[in-house]
Length: 472
Image 1 (tube, one colour):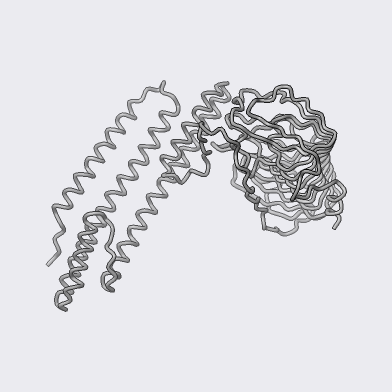
Image 2 (image 1 turned 180 degrees about the horizontal axis):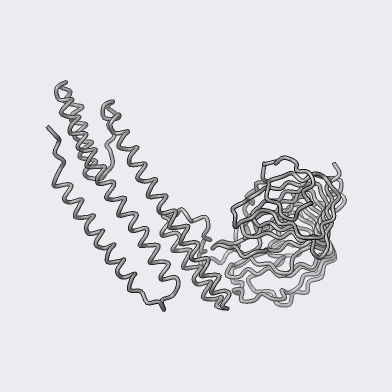
């Protein structure tokens, strides 16, 4: 005799699901009626929420069907076990069935026959949840792409404020439709009541790529590198651009430069990352542009870089910040840098480096408060020495435990539409023979000039100490 499912429970469940489905259909009809003149975000938001709602409703029906089948199986098992006379086990089966019908969750009983049949139920439930997660992830990916496209269109049309509003609304939408899984791509909104100085925490280490690809001979015979490789040691002139990776074809590569290499460029000497990471150690570079598109990274360790540039290139972007990342460790950098920097497009991390004869650009914080970024691993310069540099205020706000020799501190030339700095921030500057020419210091900013000898507990490199390190 076949088991008869709990009809009352099934009708109640079906009633709930029917109401959800009706709500979904009404929502869909509302979406169809949206005017073509509606804001871009409204259409994207409604479509995303509709897709998530449809996936959630389908999941509810699948789980209801699975619960009905499981309770029926429990009823059949009870009949089978009744012949054995094990009343306690039968009681546990019924409690399991009641728990499934009420909440969908199993009981805590661990009787072997019950555990065996429960495993099948839980395995099926896991598969349903995985399918739902995949469907939601697809919606998140599609929504992020649409938001990026609209941001780009608004920006190109000169509607920067509208693009920024779209981004902010988009971040909230991404959190909502992803169930929180997209949180890493969204910045924290800080408490506007905060008036105290931010705590300086240890910075998270930067993870250097561990992959060491095979050596490829004569890589400079072509300007398009589409294979992961270790570049053999060479003293190489670079007179035309070298393009690494192909994002449109989803070809991502990892390039490692052999130690003691020397590369020299000219006006067209460029190394551009479009879908790649680039790691160089104990090498020298001069007159080259090291440009990175979104999600690409340069890593320089124990290197000397003279008259080089480090811009963000390409048009790829998303809703986060620090698109193009450059990492410097134990490097000597002279007469180099980029003409334009923004928090959104540029990530920089430098530690135990020496910067000499550089006129640094203004860095645009845009909608960020510098105090909110004092512990950001991709926007900090720590334990470095600056020699004969001209440094605007915005760049000084990136430093921590740094020494300055014969430098000039100046006002920022162009902050664009950056928000006014209102949150307190203090930077200690360990100086020798420096000139303070900042005439427009915001009240929330404190630049605390100290003598060299007051910096304790850290080692600041010199050009000579770095040269020794590179030669080892």
